[in-house]
Image (cartoon, rainbow, N blue to C red; front, side, top):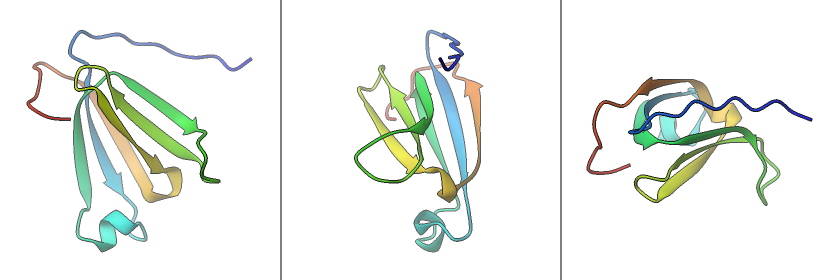
Length: 87
C-alpha cells in the first residue's frame, strides 16, 4: 500500500508551476503558472488518459486541473495566507 502524506492548512497552498520548454503551455507563452488555495495535490494521478499526471485541486474554489508530469519542470507549494478571488 502506498503511503500518503497529508498536510492540512485552512487556506490551502499557492502552487507555482514551472513548465518544461517542450510543454504545450511553454510553447503557447506560459512559462509559469500559479494556482491559489490548492487543498490537494495528487502525483501520478490516474485518469482516462494514458499519461502520468499531477492533479491540483481546490475544495475552496471547487475546481482543479491535471497536468502531464512530463510538462512540469518543477512545482512549489507554499502555505496560502489569504483566500484568493480565483483558483
